[in-house]
Image (tube, rainbow, N blue to C red; front, side, top):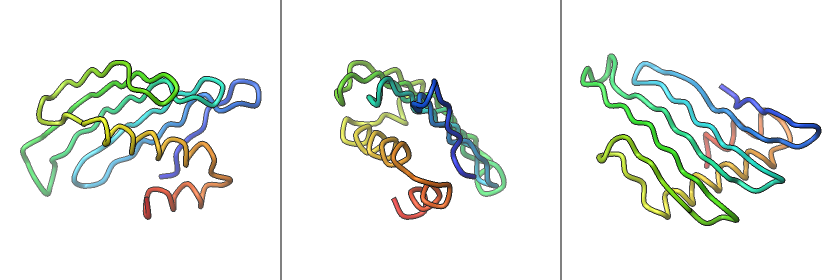
Amino acid sequence: MVPLLFYSNDAIVKVLNVGAEDHGSWKEEYYFDNGDLIFIYQNNTYGGAVNPDEFSYQNRYYLHKGRLLKSIESNKDMHLNESDIKELAKTAFKLLKAKNSSEMARIFSCG
């Protein structure tokens, strides 16, 4: 699924990436203020047909000018270090700059 974009006037304020496959579902939200990534939310579940033991987590990351200010993670087994969070931020900015839906889809398939 191609992410959804939310606008305030002409500026993107939110990118929503939501989907599901046989092994789980995901919801990732990236929030922007004047082009600055300020918040990342993840609500992901893995399990299902491939692995009946469900594993889920909700993570929240607060940022300011590219710097992590605060993180709240619901599952200690799904802790992201600062470099992992920077990779999420890179993905968010690639989505923000994507020109069309096929370019967005390529970001998820190729990184």
